[in-house]
Image (cartoon, rainbow, N blue to C red):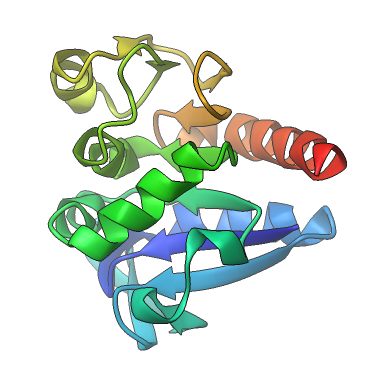
Length: 182
């Protein structure tokens, strides 16, 4: 499977990119880093600058049809920026419309609120997003990982970096199931 990882040019939580990326690679998938512009993307370790990562394609050069699944890393600044970018919001929305699996962790669920794709979905996130998600029609629960199949696609969500082992296991399993259905 070819899996898009969508990040802002800076501000994403580095470990929420690198660990799922490695899990996809170990499972035989092909991860691709997508951002709002080509070049490099700056990771963060909480509030400190981390590594930079090569962006495989800017959002203008790709569409959801180029990928089998989507992963949305968190970090506070990352989804806050992405939700202000209409092309990024539409990119995310298309995965739901096309029934493709999406995995989002921590603060990344903010872009799902902006894309209006959480209504009626059970999910989890960083606790401070609970009110935003409930106001958008989601059922929020405090669990390490939630796999929701109650919508047009499968939505995998987790709360924080401490949940990455469960998040990675769930997304790899669901992406494999989705790959067999295609």
